Length: 244
Image (cartoon, rainbow, N blue to C red; front, side, top):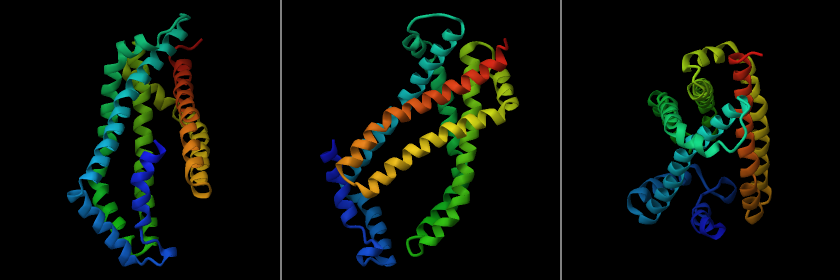
């Protein structure tokens, strides 16, 4: 796998006209133009893009079913049941949770209809002046906050749907408990950010096989943090929906 990825990435990186290697802003712009042209003419690049798109689609399709199994497991634990409920949960709630995910993707991409033209113009200008990339920060930050809020609201609605207590009552619980819910996300998000920084620093100072190994090994704690985040939000929701 390492050699497979390396055979595609390294030749592209070697052609990049970096400033420290004597490259100029015009050279970087021509590099971008060449890349645009290659997307239309080079079958190898299109093959790589289709493979990448296939992996992304596969992950997007599997994630809702995994979440459905986890939610069903949590519901059964709340009821005091014992056993393996993950796979029955995937079968029972996989498609409804997939619909929730589809709504999340649509709502998440919707602002790009207005943001993308502005961001694209700034991105093109940044090839000649890197400082212009700072102008992208407010747009990206606002978009990420919007996506976070949408995901949080829909997650609580999934709690309500899969438990049978109602989607909108669970949404109301989320609104009432918004500060603790955001706090949970910030704490676990910070842990995920530290993990991401470790991978990034390793990629800068120990590029090659060590960085790839650490990146692959980081998938397990990253997944655990995500599951922990869903479980923590669920227990917050449960404390409000089923007070002792």
